[in-house]
Length: 296
Image (spheres, rainbow, N blue to C red):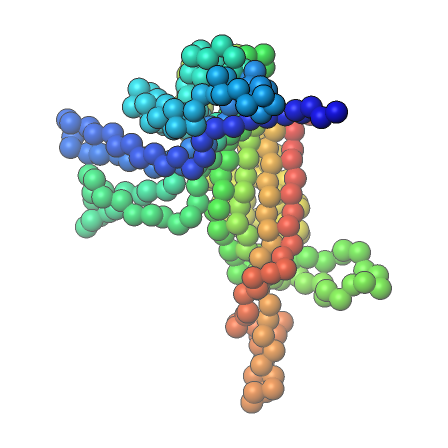
C-alpha cells in the first residue's frame, strides 16, 4: 500500500520590483526580489483522488505575492515574508503552513560628481540578501536570513599547514596563500509567535544583516587565517554576540583555488613560492567547508 508522506506546492520564481517615491525630496528607492511560496495543509486528496477543490491555484498565489507587495513594505524582507505567509493561513482554513523564500537582488545608488543620484542605480555584483520563512499554525513564524554569493579574495594572510599527512597526501604545506570564496552565510532567529512580534522591533533585521556582512568582510580581511574552518568559526561567534535574538549561525564557504604557474622552463623565470606573481584560477575541484554555531 502507498501513502502520501509529504506534500507542498505553490509558485516559484515570481519576480517583483517595487519603487518607493519620496515626494518631498524627489528621491526614489527600489527593491527587486525573486519570491517562492509553497503551501502545506489538508491537500492530500488533490494528489490521491484528483480533488482540485482543495487547491489554491498557483496563479492565485502569484497574484497574492504582488498584492501583498503593494499592501505592505517589502523591506526588510523578513517582515514581507511573514505578512505574505500569514495571509494564506488567515485566508484558507485548510492551509497549515506557508513556506516563503525571498531573494533580494542588489541595486546600488549611482553617485554622480560625488552626489547620490535620486533615481539611478547599478547592479553591484551577484550578492543577494535572502530570507526563508516558515509560517505555521502550530509552530509560529520561523525565519532564517542569509547573505549569498558575496565573492571575496585576499592575496595573502592565509596559511594551511599541520594537516594529516599519509600515503594519500600530495598537497604541500603553505604559510602564505591566496584565499578566495563565495560567502553563503545564514542566521536563524528565535521563533516569533505572530506577525506583530516580527514587526515589533523590526529594525533588528537590517541591523543583523549589516552586522553579519561587516563582520564577514572585516574578519576575512584581518584574520591571519590558519584555515577556512577557524576563520568561519570566528565569524559565527561575533555574529551571535551582535544579534541577541539569533540562535544559530552557519557558513558554507567553497575554497576557490589559485595555483602557482611554474615558468622556470621559459628563460628561467622564477614564479613559485616567494617569487609567485602569476597564478591560474581553478574552476574545480574546490574545497567546501561548512559549519553551524549555536549558543551554548
